[in-house]
Amino acid sequence: MTDQAPQTPDKVSPEPFIRIIELHKWFGEFHVLKGINLSVNKGERIVICGPSGSGKSTLIRCINRLEEHQRGRIIVDNIELTNDIKNIEKIRVEVGMVFQHFNLFPHLTILENLTLGPIWVRKLPRPEAENLARYYLEKVHIAEQAQKYPGQLSGGQQQRVAIARSLCMKPKVMLFDEPTSSLDPEMVKEVLDVIIQLAKEGMTMLVVSHEMGFAKSVAHRVLFMDFGQVLEENTPQEFFSNPRHERSKLFLSQILR
Amino acid sequence: MEDASITLQATEEVRPPVTNIGALGWVRQNLFSNPFNSLLTLLVAYGLYRTVPAFIKWAFINAVWWSDSQACNQAGGACWSVVTRNLRFILFGFYPYDQQWRPVFSLGLLAAVVVYSSFRRNWNKRLFVVWAGGLALIGLIMHGGIFGLPSVETEKWSGISLTLLLSIFGVAAAYPFGVILALGRRSRLPAIKTLCVVYIELIRGVPLISMLFMASVMFPLFLPEGITVNKILRAQVAIIMFTAAYIAEVVRGGLQATPRGQYEAAESLGLNYYLKMRLIILPQALKTVIPPTVSILISAFKDTSLVVIIGLFDLLRTTHVTLSNPEWMGFSTEAYLFTASIYFVGCFVMSNFGRRLEKKLKT
Image (cartoon, rainbow over the protein chains, first blue to last red):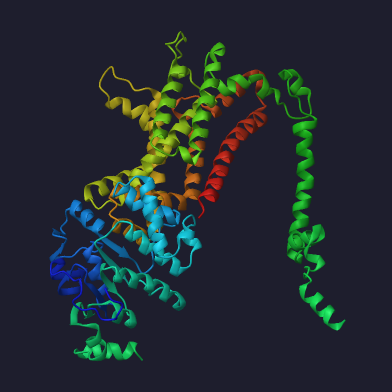
């Protein structure tokens, strides 16, 4: 894969890895998602943006069932998400998630944070899990922090650990829920660099983010959401230079000011 | 020259003003910082002056330690002889005199189990085996009837061994039971949730005394003819059920204080409910609630003295019985001070352990 910005049809396989069909969700009376249709192919990278409250986080949280949908279908890796807890757990193993607030486990060291999933869910022997953890810590450039606790790390470091923690489960797709929104400005780059690196290696990902430069350099598609609907679906170049929908124009004019 | 003195000044450490350090500074800052505090200091000092020397004189200087009650009546101070002369009865009650090494041995075993449990590296499944085994062994030794030990009916188990058995096993069983109740109360399954809510609210709405009464008076009425459940066991179960309800509510507080994100992170790794709770949520929640938990355990320890109400002879009761002996009547202050100090040591150990644990688990 080349380093150049927009890579459109490179390694995306035509087989849809995630299929979302007519997805509806309500929070009480509030209709958050109003009929979302989306399929994500293997190797595809999608950036979702939109104003707060538009339902973008809820959408990706439905994919690993942190939120329950009420109507429509979600199929991940040929497994349909239903109330069957076994299916949900199977899908969660394949789907990595990175949160806005990192959500590292504060009572465990960095290394323990990383090995927990592989040991208890993947059933790897401890030494093997630790090797895996060190490999990914190396990859996110914080191998030297392995024995510290999350509270001793900066926000940027914590988020990189969180990414490594997800990667240790060898997920087939990664979900990023505003991964840089709660970081100090100077730490945004170190986290984005790690995600871009991951993108170059061909990871399938859905990213909720407002980082325009990032979206341009990694995304195959940009989805613009508001009012619980996908209002525009476009290539990043087109979306940022020539948005089609009135609402996306307004949104872009506001964040690019 | 000018230059040199400037650099010197810059590197020289600035010392705090003299009034803030040393004994004088401490006194001024903590005891006489303003007129009101000065007045309080003087009042407290006067109060101490009036009470402490008098108490020391009574408790130590004029006290008698090993005399008979005759000498006690003539002494001007405390009569500790009431304790020393009756020590074995106060501690072991009606347990046969020549067999009292058995409660001593059991208490040693109990202490060993407690010490074993206080090490973090032993916090695993084997801990349950150790407790169950310890309980069984203590029961065997106390009750006898095998290994050539003469059998001692449970009616004769009394004094400190009864108090400690009831409280330590009560607490050890109530804690895991309470955690399970707390998890049940937060369950999504309505049947389990309702069951736990009803249990907790019912138990919390009833005084311990009435639970003990029910256990000793009402419960046997429901049993078929000829079947009896040991009285101590019934009291023990009542204490466990009572304490567990309180622990459940405290633990629930800890579960609710654990951020939503921790649950989500655990779930998104694919951990199932059991692993999520055991590895991620409970370690954090239980740590958060150490202070109120220790409070509950302390009050459970002290509440075991309520078993006198159903005719069990715990530490407080054996003290009381000692004092009803005409020879030792009238020395209740000394005897109760002794009993109180035993309770205090137990409680103090618990709260110290809690504090140490908090410090150790701090991250």
